[in-house]
Image 1: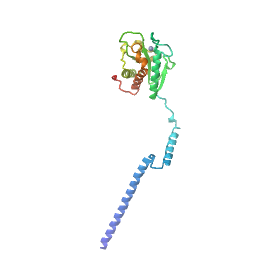
Image 2 (image 1 turned 30 degrees about the vertical axis):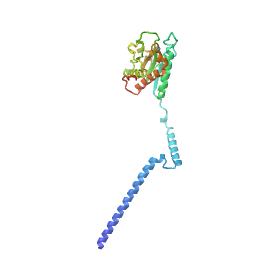
Image 3 (image 1 turned 45 degrees about the vertical axis):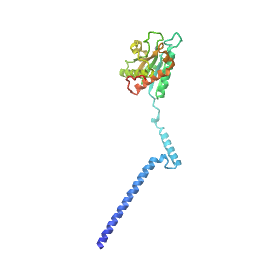
Length: 262
Ligand SMILES: [Zn+2]
């Protein structure tokens, strides 16, 4: 009996200590969970708003302290060059009936392309036909914007023409930029590629030999001022959108296969 009692006491004592351990586990466990929740939810308002505000202020001031480090210096944004054909030099093609000039169309479209690409986060230079900056010009891409003659040639003289600077260091890039502009311009404007008639004068465009050899460059004749006059004069934003989308297709490495017009 005595022995049995002693045994029972020992068991009880063991059981009691086990219970204490179990309770400790529970306490620590709940504490850990609460601590996690508290940490995770603190900004959401589990603490008084005044304290939360101090917290936010502290975070704010610590991040503004970070801006004092040299890494905060703004990196130059990627550059794109847009040449407004004939701008600063001559009128380009002229329509004898209304006096419409190619240079005014080119400058309007080029300005809109610049606005669109600037809105996408690029540094865009609007360049004159014989701009001093063209010599050794370095950019992700350069597009020179022109329009075709206002003379009536025949009923096939409609659509756009493209030529790439294939003598550059990376002709495959020039071909990709060309394919991108063709695909997006066609889909956006509904105009057809008329490059079969691209003149040698286009592929030996003067700026192609002036820009840095790493700069991918193309020239576009956006349309004929005779048969395509309506879209060129009435929807310059659509013309600009097609060109801007073509440049973005190239820069973002998008699929350059032809996109069907809607
Ligand atoms: Zn021109």
